[in-house]
Length: 156
Image (tube, rainbow, N blue to C red; front, side, top):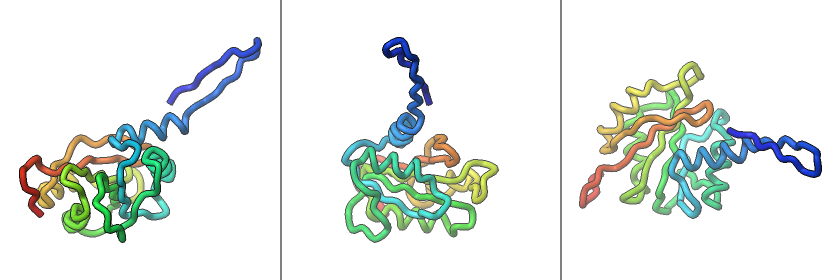
């Protein structure tokens, strides 16, 4: 977040560019760029609309839902404690994923309702044939990037 002060005609104007900076920062943190095909799963009333809107603005289109038949480059999986078996969900999530596609598991931060222990994601990813990386902070959510192994043939 940053603020810019401009001096125009002797009058100082304070212009805070927080929302735009965060929006670009969220998409950038997730490695999402214009034109990418992004699917969203697990949406609920508690999801972060600022994060969602920033991604839609960056890609230039709406997020796809679970009914899509398209091959996707990124899956955003909003996941909370009590949502079910993460391994089963990850196995379903990778079905429409491009060979070099990624999955972002988005969980509420520590202390928030629905918080998921990071070890659950780290333990579930390999069972679904995915590798997990270090989580990133996304407002009141945490994102954990899951990638597919770099192999000549994709196993599912």
